[in-house]
Every structure is written in C-alpha cells, then in structure tokens.
Length: 143
Image (spheres, one colour):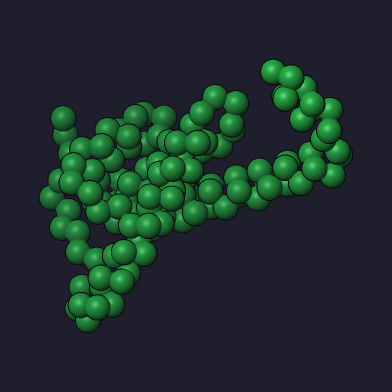
C-alpha cells in the first residue's frame, strides 16, 4: 500500500485532468457507438428466426477480411464492456458487452445476446432509444 500512497502524492492536476478527459471521451464514444448500432439493427435481430449473413453478394476475400475486422472489434468491445462493468468504473458496461457480442461470430452467442437484451431495464432503454429515432421496437422470441 505504500506504493499507492506514493503514487497518489505524486499526481499533478494536469495528470488528473488528463485522466478525467480521457474517461469522458471514452464514455461518449462507447455510448455513441452502442446507441448507433442498437438503433440500426433490424427489429428481428434478436429473434431465433433471423438469418444472419454478413455482406451477401460480395467477393469472398472482401467478406473474410471484413468478418475478421468485425470480430477483432467485437472482442475489443467485449473486453472494454467487462472493464466498464467493474465496480468503481462508470460506463455502459452491459450495453458495450452486448454491442461486442453482436459483432462476434461465436457459437452460442444468440442465447447470450437474448438473455442480455431481455433484461427489462436494457430492453426498455433500447426500445426507447429506437423509438426516438423512428425505429420499431425489437422483436424477441416468446419464452
């Protein structure tokens, strides 16, 4: 604990202001990206009947490159969402994890996505955001 006390005493106002600024910028980017994706996903995206095909009709090499980039970005977003979910770190952790999961191509992700989006607080916020931008509410499977 001595190292923490030494670190705390050595902080300058500029370092603290930089940390706060970095936090605010990352928060705005995280919330903005999450909102953009959740507003633009098709209403039936979380339904088990939704057929998912990425960039249909494009050349194979273009699709594979885009899929790889999408999965790397999705993994980064899941990690950031987990960090934002830790106590003491404010941010939209659950929504960021959901955004990352939407982008990942992993087996078993549909039930996990559905479990997250079914939470009444999450579904209410997402549908309210979608209605603000003139989008229909999300359609979920009946349990």
